[in-house]
Image 1 (spheres, rainbow, N blue to C red):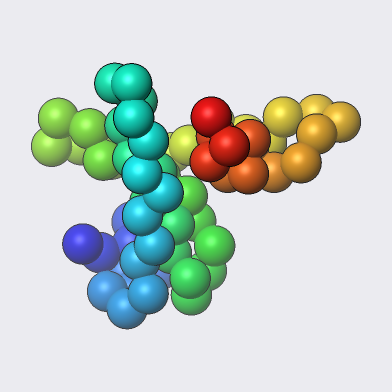
Image 2 (image 1 turned 180 degrees about the vertical axis):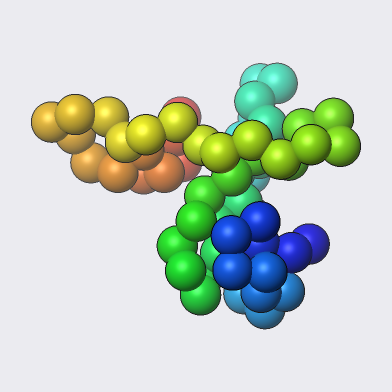
Length: 61
């Protein structure tokens, strides 16, 4: 998998989810977070206000 922003193929982390949610992908080079869905790439939603990072919230679910 290649980062859609910096095109790096090294260090792509996968945050796996159950219950029908898609996995979040994060580039460790530039920090971009995205979802790979139906052969297209969509950026992840912005972080939640007054909360920890969205990844931590979703990872705890």
